[in-house]
Image (cartoon, rainbow over all chains, first blue to last red; front, top):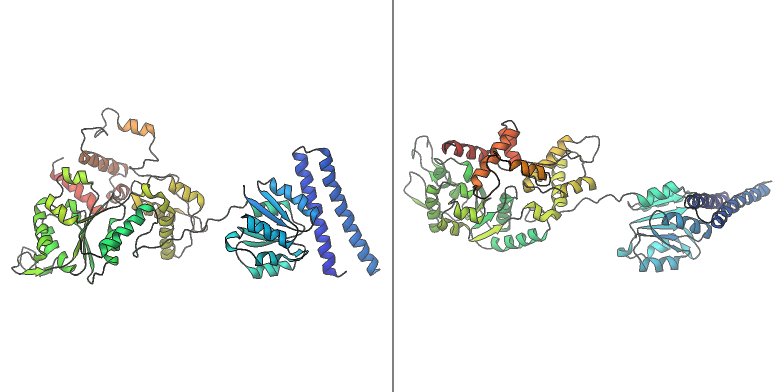
Length: 63
Length: 450
């Protein structure tokens, strides 16, 4: 994967993390059902995992 | 509710950002490919288009390619993970096009969607080179000016003080095929002794001080337009002489023996109403019909408030040009201007803006109005208490039946002079009359022994 593509992928994943974290904050402030909040936070976790995978594969390729 | 179109194929992003935007008070439509985005844009008018560059069937630019002019969103923002997009969007330019680089912050979205759209400066046209305004009343006036300009008919312009009667005279002159000049005179500002000489001219030695021959206003306006402002203030005993010239088209200089042929349109003006002209005996009936072949009534500014932004912009542009500044009018200033009655009409508006222009901070380009607009005539500033107080027992010239307009006018002038510590220039400005008119009124009161 080229450096540009890695950056692009990471930016997209971080974007999802940031937006879902904001959404979770909004849902909490609006006292949304706990299941909804958990589903949103699950996406935050998924985003973090995705970032880790991209970084792992990159270090694997370089290593 | 305003709409936002979100074009992105990343469902994790769109499902999170949609409720966040909806929470800002927008309706959100989502498209995950070019054709779906086009279909939304063809159906709806959008406040903002949030557009990912990389889409399954093409790019975000393909969405823009097919955009109809009347469906262009108020603003377009590219949302991208490529920081290189910055230079691309910068090249695309346009004040309504921007970009957001992922990861975006909620604050950035709020700034983009909730920012107040700057008010575009009002664009105005100067009709006949001088008149600004597009209200129905002004459009009807333009029609009449156009029609009368094609004839040689004399015009009597009536309207409150400050409505722009001299500008209308200029407009008639500009719209006509007149070869000669526009010559203007204020009948209220010429002394009784001199008015004959001013209007008709004099020969050398016609009277003490007539050291040389002088052509009168009629001669100077030959083949052009003679504008007689405040014609109803012309001494009644001089009016038969004017009538004779209007009837015969011939003028004899004071002290002269030769009749000179003159050909000019006479545009006269007064701020007196028809009733006041007739009942007050300010104008002879025969001369009225000679002057008012084509009467024109100018609307007060309060009856054409939709023209205020255009007029204000035209005045600000003039002042910016004169002083090399770049002041603008924001919505708050315009709202204030629109909420006031402008009893002194366009003249008062121009003066208020001039005052604001002087008071505003040169380091900021936004005009700052004084805390309160007003003049002794201001209605929007007048409270019920003010009215009650003005009618309290003992107050001179109360607003009640039986008092003449002249008495009210005199009282108003006295009150205004008192309010400005006798400063006549300031008083004339507040009253919306010329300084000469103010002096004439004061002289008249002296002569009347009042």
